[in-house]
Each structure stands twice: as C-alpha cells, then as structure tokens.
Image 1 (cartoon, rainbow, N blue to C red):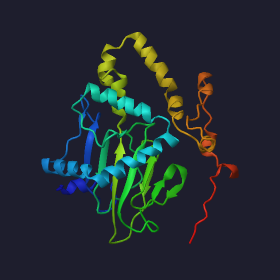
Image 2: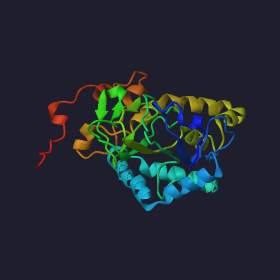
Image 3: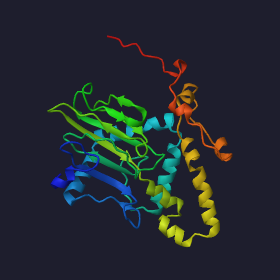
Image 4: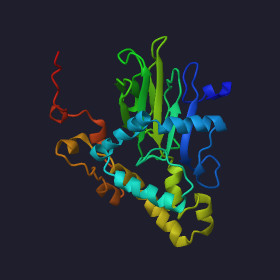
Length: 281
C-alpha cells in the first residue's frame, strides 16, 4: 500500500504518525446517502480486501464478538439492524462474516500509538472493538488508557477489547524504540442508525417532510434516549448474579429527575470484586 506524507498525520496519530486502511460503509461527513467507504487508491483497496480475507485476520476480528452477550445484551438487535439496512441497500460492502460492525480501520504502523481522543462520529451507546497487533513488550508500552476512569490497561498483541469509544476518552502509551504496533478497529457510525430511524433518509430530509406529530414524537424519544442507552450496559453486580439484561434507570427519568449514576462511578465494595486467580509458576 502507498500513502502520501499527509496520510501519516491525523488526530488519532501520535509522534511520527501512521497511515490507515478503511473498509465497510458509513454515513456522515457531508454524505447525501449511505455508501461504501472509498480507499485512497485502487491498489490500496485491493490490498485492504486481501488483508480482510486472510483467515487469521478474520478469526481475530470475529472471535471477540462473543464478548457481546456477556456485557452488552443487544447483539441480536444489531444483527437485525444490519439485516434491515443491507436488505434495503444490497450494494453495501460488509467487513467480516456475521460482524456486528459496519466498518473496520487498520492502523498500519509501524508505530500505531494514539493520543487521547474520542470517536465522536461513532454511535454513542455503541461499542468499538479494538484488536492489538505487532511485536512489542506489553509490560513496557502499548497500554490502553481510559482517561475518564483513571484506568491503564495492559494490552498485549493478540488481545481485543470493547469500549464505547464515542464517549470514553482513550489513548495508548508509547512503545519501545525498534518495536512495532498495529491495530484493527471495528465500529459503526451513529449516522447509520439515524438513517434507518428516519425511514432511510437523512435528518435534513426527514425534517422537510415531518409533521407536527412527528416532531412531538421525536422530542419524546430524545428525552428517553439516554435512559434507553444506559439499559444496554451491564454492571458488574449484574454479572455476578448472571443477569446480562442490563440495569434500567428509567423510573427517575419518568419523574423528570436526573438519573443516579453513582453505581457507575463509586468504587466497588470488596464483595463486588471478582475472585483473584492464583498465578501458578
């Protein structure tokens, strides 16, 4: 793959920067319609397709999706959403078989390290699947930093993690000189979901034909949007009792009050920590 010098420097790149390869479909960024993401050249498009067809890459990209049912009880809804979207728009190019994501970005290194950022274009209550690749000492660098939660997570090559990247500020720690780090990022833009919610049209097109009743209904849906989004996330205290349905905080919203997020922010009690494993040598 070949890239101009400017392709190495963008808001998700740190230091000397790195180029990216993108595949899938999206909506937004002045688009008038949903469509496939175009590669920078025909050659780069062919190489990207070859990469995504590699059996090892497919396995790495699709195996972690089994995490969804354990902590996010809505993969079935995502698959139904994509089936509806693809039936209406069969020309859209998918990323991987049975993937619940619309797009994939390969950070091509050789030093793929990102500064603190959020991916504001992604679905706010959606997840981003990040896979780490390369040859680096994970004890000394390449950690995933979630700034909002004061978390520094060891993130060695071959591991994957799900985070709500649109709302959680995240970055990587630098790796050692001479090491290499790449990453595979899977995600869906929020614009796709708005497109389907608008009966397959943009917000601008929907507003031009919306009735007064439509506008009132949209405003009521907007008021409940945050509470509905929170219901999609499972808390550790739910996981302990094998309740993966999420924690609904809708009662306070119905009364017009502010939802209580204390159980998301407060430190867990000793009884809420998982049992520590004994490391055998």
